[in-house]
Length: 196
Image 1 (cartoon, helix red, strand yellow):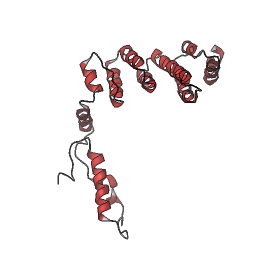
Image 2 (cartoon, one colour):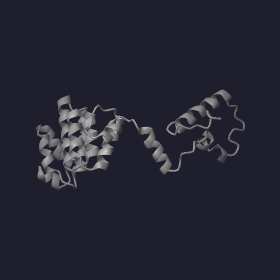
Image 3 (cartoon, helix red, strand yellow):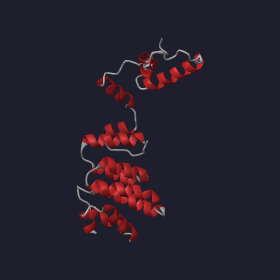
Image 4 (cartoon, helix red, strand yellow):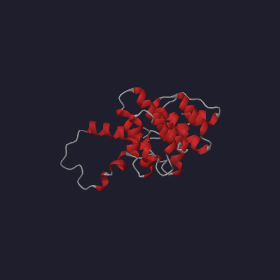
């Protein structure tokens, strides 16, 4: 096994351990220089597992490797893929960096995961209570708070003779502009078309 790992033959090592059903031993052979290749191969192999137990074992090994090298967002992604609340809680407790914990909380909120933390700030992030405020704060930092017109999105003013010769139904044009306006300005809470 170490020969495969030391000679950049991680797929062969993974295949061998999968064949003999000893995949959990792979965690001990991973190093900072090869663990990402091993995990990428494991996650690509998991969907092709012949049964659910083998697939979950593959994901669990991937989770353990990511956790060992403190790649908590990747570990949480695998735990969520497994839908394993115990691993999700384990990942959240193992992470000590407060910024990374907030990132994990955002990931949990995005998937509407039922995990609850002892930290009220993390619970608020997970519950998506202040998602709009965070979006507006980001928009303020990027200086994009002013609502955009559909013409800014289409940039049709840059094309000469854009509508000449075309007979476009005005109802369809208005519907398209309404959809574009709604999607572009949804998070800002302001709107140029409806407010006018």
